[in-house]
Image (cartoon, rainbow, N blue to C red; front, top):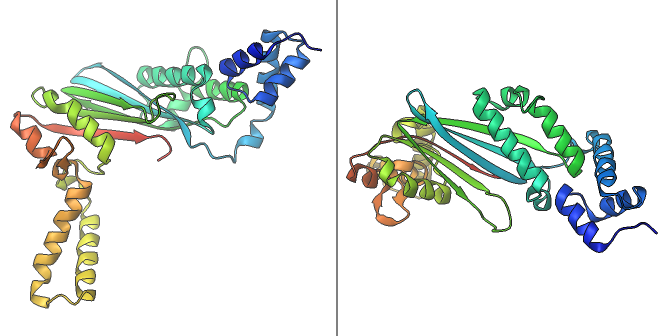
Length: 279
């Protein structure tokens, strides 16, 4: 019988994120030698990478860095996905998230392709991802990256489950005055997931489509022809209030819009980014 205990199995699972059966098989093959068992798990994991390509990776984490830049501050937000929440909270996966973020900051990468090719301690990010996938026995994906710059950049990370890494990440760029309420705005963005910063940022085609849909809906409801223009504009305003950050009712005081709250402190919000794992 192999020389290991239930505590050894638990420790190895926590260290590698591998499944119970895989850990027991590796310890059996390694005759209880933990370091050798880890090597066995990694080797078998490398062989299984191709088989995992089609699997969905919808769990994982988001990570954020904000640092000084030439024009003020720059925030970097990355999302790294795993197949299960068990792997998402493993030390190997969390360390990979930190490595991917560090590479994103150092390289200045603006897209996933550039990030995967960036250096991550002597090897590429892609190589680091493949190594982690081999150890963890799951498909690992660097899904997306965002960069936000401004005079001030405020970050917010939210855990939807206290046992997991952050699942929602937000960056908010503002001027110095706006920074006073930027944390509250970031928390609002985390909860209400706006699509656009201001009305001016909504594509003209999107506005035209919303007008057309509102008009067709009103006609189907039998609304008077003369009332259509006012009804359409009212429904377009409703679209803005739902999708545009500065028009949304502020989470901490719904009687005010986010734009009003920012203006009251004499500030301006210039950009934002929001990631929710798997969304």
